[in-house]
Each structure stands twice: as C-alpha cells, then as structure tokens.
Length: 477
Ligand SMILES: *Cc1c(COP(=O)(O)O)cnc(C)c1O
Image (cartoon, rainbow, N blue to C red):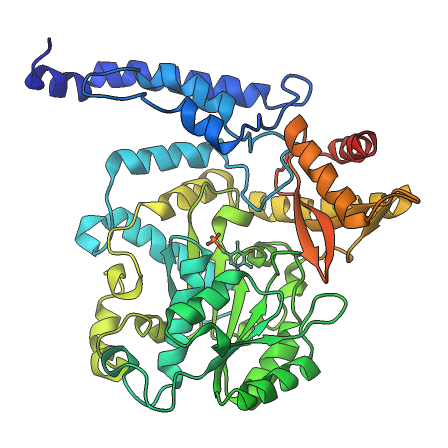
C-alpha cells in the first residue's frame, strides 16, 4: 500500500502529468477528428436520466479506481458532441479547441481573481477584454465592466446597478423604501433570467412588466407605452427597460433606437440583453442589428454563445463605468468614487462572485492567436447560414418558418398535409431526432404553436448538413 506521502508525490509528479496530459490530448484530438457525420453519425447517444445515473454509480471509493485517461473515453461516448457539425440545438457553442487548452492552463494555474494580487495576469486581461467589448458597442473611454459567470448573473448585476442609479436612497444599506422597489419593463420575449433577476431583487416577479411584441418579435413604441401604463396600474414606477439584442427563442433584435428613445423620454435605465446576439458587433455586415446600442446604459455579452468559448464567460458592460460599482456597493457611489477609480483591479467589488476562474484567459488567448477578424468572419458566416437555411425551408414547400431569422437562430415546422395536430407532430419529430441522435435540435413554443428550433453555432455546419436534416425530418415524420 502506498503511503500518503507516496500518493502526494505521485499526484504532483511532472513526468506522470506529462504522460497523462499527452494521452488526454491524443484522445480528445481523435474525438475531434471523428466529429464528422461520415465518421461518427451520432451527435449524442441519449440515455434516460436513471440509466445515466446508474452508469456512474459506485465509481469511486477510498482507494483509487480509474486513471483519468481510462475514464475519458466513456465520458466522451456518453456526452453530447458539440464539436459535431450536426449539433444545431441549444445556444451552447462548439468550443475552439485552443480555448479549451487555454482554459486548461488557467485551471492549472488557478489564479482565482477576487482581488488583483490573487490573479494579476487575469485581472489585466479582463480589463482589456471589457474595454474592447465596450468599444465595439460605440462607447467612450468612460465605459467599463466585468466578466462574470453567465448571462443570468450578468442581467442581475446590470439591474442591481440600474435600481441603485434610480433610487434616492442607498438601497444596498437601507433596503427598499415604503414606496416599494419600482418595476422593470421587459419584452415578453425576454430570457427568463431577467424576470428571475427582478424576483431575486425582492421586487416580486410582478414588477417585471411584459412588453408585447409585434409579429417579428420586436418591442414597439406603442407596446412600451402600454407597458408603462400597466406598471402604473400595478402601482409601480418603472426604473429600467430591457431590450433583446437578440432574443433567445427566435433570435430577434429589438429596435434599440426605438427602445432608447423611449427610455430617454421616460427617464429609464436602458439595458440590452446581448447575451446571445452581441457578437454581431464584430460583423461589418450585421453590426447594424445593434444600432442604438451606443445609447444603452448597460449590456451583457456571452462569449460562450457567440465567440466560440467554453462556458462560462459573460461581460457586463456599463456606458458609465462608475455605475459598475453600484451593483454590489455597500456605500453610495459618491462616497467612494475616488476609491473606485483606484480599485478597478479588485473585481470582487463589482461581481457577485468572490473567487472567479481565469475566464478571460480563454478569450484573450484565442483573440491573440487568431485575431479579431477571425471572430468577425465566424459571426458573419453563422448569421448568413441561418438566412440561407430559412430560404431553403421556404423553397422546400413542406416546411414553414416562424419568422425571418435575424441572427443564427431559426424556428421552423414540418407541414404534413392532412395529418395530426401540428404541435404533436413537431414534438414527435423532436423526440425521434433525440433518440436517433443524428442531429440535435430543440423546440420552442410561440403563441401556442410548437416549433423546431436550430441555433447555427458550429462553424463546421454546412448547408449540406441542414439539407440532410430536412431529409431526416421527412423520413421520421
Ligand atoms: C442564454 C441567454 C441568457 C442566459 O445566459 P446564461 O449564460 O445561460 O446564464 C440571457 N439572455 C439571453 C437573451 C440568452 O439567450
């Protein structure tokens, strides 16, 4: 039996690490090579949750059981293959292999950066990344922000700052006043994390007042006025409006000029949820979808959705960078304005997290290795592919699209003449696709109708893959 000392020595042995690392990278590289419909037809091998749970039961105990390189092949076989061009489901992106390597290096170093001295390199990289992203939004040098663990926390962070900015009291210290906490006007197409943030803030979900959308899933000036009036009927005074750039279900971009105009007139904080769609800022062709963003007070951007990054890495950005200190402030901003300027490098003042992974490293390393044009090209190609797919669906005759795609999300239905209820048919097709595992597609409900939904997020997905998807659907139906 090895002693504890022997075990520690072995666990930190550089040569053992080198050997295991080489084996792991070899296995992953082989997996990548086989992520091709001609080699591995299946994107996923769906098993029900109980089967999966049982498969991983009793696999560790007091003594060593399986070296990692031996465990890895089974993990790969049972996982969803996001590198596969026929993964066209959720908004989780194929990760750049290089970004995964950078993430591995970051985990190896484990410089969790709550304050500067814990993670100096990461802190500087994060600063450059948020400045770069804010610059793409058309904001000046006063803009600032932080990286955080996902769009849900990002929306919460921005709305906390928005509430403090509107309040005539120090909400952080004193809590809500007798007049309550106000309201937030939210597109009825908003991601649920926005309503959740409002509820977490103690306002009650009722304070998230829905704004109706038109047939392109955009908020309208009239809809915004109606929601304003509805907030009044609920006895609440709105302090913010949240626009989609773009929405989750259909990938639709609100007209940010219209929303910004309304926000300015009503004196509201203007937040843009760009978790999914902000990548368009990189594309000369599609940047126009976010026209008006320069007037927003805050926006969020998920690099794990449209910049090929492994989850999670979200930027929360503020046009007036000082506002970023108000989300989690224990003092009113005017009291520590001086201090805050000196302390940009201690991110924990401004994030929900205390310890944070070296998340910026993945994006920084990828931008350094490939350049920003590479990412611009990627976004343009994916947004183009969605338009091409929609045209293909329209031409096919036996499919219908929910709306002309604006980003890389396409919602569509199969039409089978004289056949069962359309919703049942789509549900059945979706389920059959999941079980067959040759494509991964999701579903969404819009106005009581169920739609198949694809996010074209993998740069190796081709028009031919999408043509094959339509054939697969026809054969399953
Ligand atoms: C995905 C998404 C979110 C949530 O982001 P996470 O990173 O998954 O927490 C928020 N808003 C929109 C529009 C999204 O698409």
